[in-house]
Length: 243
Image: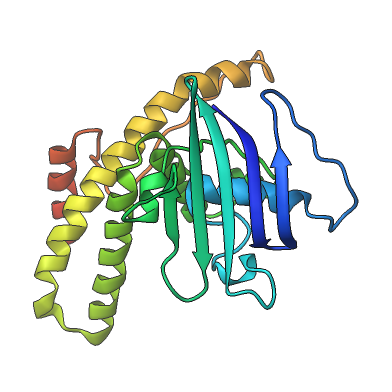
């Protein structure tokens, strides 16, 4: 797939931008602050529904504007798909596919697929474990868009359970513990399966850098005994939570 046209309205520094692109390499050249990264950020937002630069949507909307718009034509398998996203400050964003409103912006997951590298990606190696988990989860969503719901539900359960723990209302924890285990078991299985799928590519590409020492990656979890099997993970996570 490739993006043949990108339109931005009131997004970051752009009041209006109409940008035609072609298959293959497209290179943006300009001075600092002219908006090159803003174009990349818009494409990343269509792919991930979040910015790789900030945690909230408000800075994406041009000053003195109420909302921003990203529109892109996607060429894939001899078919053109028009994706439109309205970014709102303080309320839910809205999305369209081929000019038809979709129930949730999450329905556009998987239409735009991107690979992005920046100096900050070195944190995958030297940063906190949360950075690596977030990377895996974004990749999982790109491969299997339905997992966006699983990840969102898991994060919601963790947040609610942590809030209950702070109030020491242990009697109310049982239903949240059950959801935590079920969702965590599925998410862990998916992460391990993704690592297994990535491993041959890591070994092959690292061999181009170092012919002597091989490289591999693995998933290390604080709970022992987790695998690609969800039922096994439920057993392991339940025992861990009991401890």
